[in-house]
Image 1 (tube, helix red, strand yellow):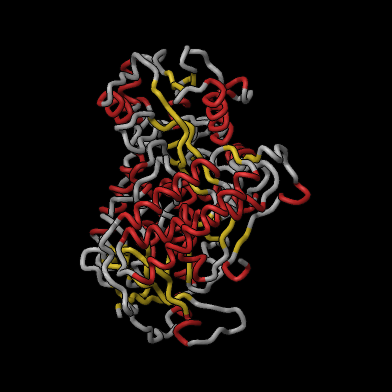
Image 2 (cartoon, one colour; image 1 turned 135 degrees about the vertical axis):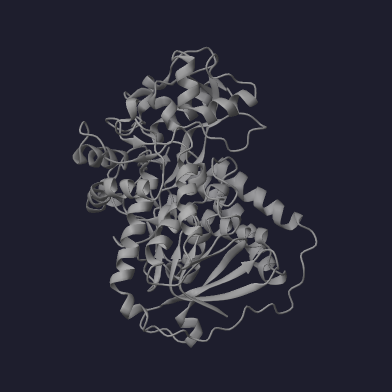
Length: 535
């Protein structure tokens, strides 16, 4: 059994920020399932939204966020995050993040993105996430109080109720996690006074996604199995513009391309977004994704196109160097021809339900970043608010930890049983995993996508049931591998998304139901909350 004061699961912006802030008074172990740079943060292109200009205002950013969330944001949380955001961005710069400067080096070069009423997105060209990850990792690697374990995949949370074999009036406490060392194949028992889930999103639940391969909803699945409340999992954001090319895996065309004047056109070069939303190409992501989906279905085309050729070629190459180079490598010169794009699963607005300090419904368990449902995003996340949410809640979670550390240190390390292998044997045919993995992702894409129908949701529930049962059998019959653990997690998250979507009989934000095209504030202007005990 390994012990530490704080166990952080995940190495994106939320996990790294939190670890840096608590390492001055606590021993931190940070586990990450692949290399430490493998995170959704590392792929983030656009930037981080905050009020950083005299031409902007907190009220404007708050208003944009509330409008994007389509009536479901927690306004108190929105005000808190937007108000605290500028200081957190300045703190990132102190950590060494090199945001793009404005002309002449004065101030920051702030970008414009869909749903925003003015320029407020701090960026590092189109590699913002990579720059933030670089700076934070550099700080973490120099800190002696942080142990980073790569190739360590969390399996399940450890609970006091199971260690002591009794439940205390519904109260439970997280004691750490079972963690698979994917290099050795051993399952390690890692206990901690405080456990923090920063595992990112669940894009790999869908067939087409902008997310990295690690985005299998691990934190949400583990928290749900442990009995924590999860919320709003029906609100899956599909990014409108993923590069359409069979050889270019999961490559995102940043929101900032439209912010800098990019226009969505059909195969004949005709702009079409105005007929779906009066805001046109700068509408919020839910509206743009539905507009593209409708256009593709009506025309039968495999994709639409994003045209920024009317901007100077030098500007395009300088502002979007990665997008330009990647598209050029696949035969598309974006300075001279439009970019073929399609929507793809991008961001989970729901997650583990937490309070204003990142605390879940289980004691000593925090959730931060995309893993959490904070109330900021509501039914649809405003572009570039995700990195903002991560740093604000990482700071608040660390502040709560510091203020309560004397009490947390009194929590005893209870004896935990080692992971039981039993009669499990090695899995010799990986097709048992890959077939179910493919089945789930195709079912979710075809039945629970951008536009949903009640009949399709009922059908997918029936079709998923035998797959879930087979996965449960595999999990106990075979020795654990990373693929098997991740398959189990995407199966849990898929089922939760379907249950949440089936229960919300209205259309709101990212959840569009053909059967119920309007809002129903009387019944559904609320979070969709699930726990394992109410299944």
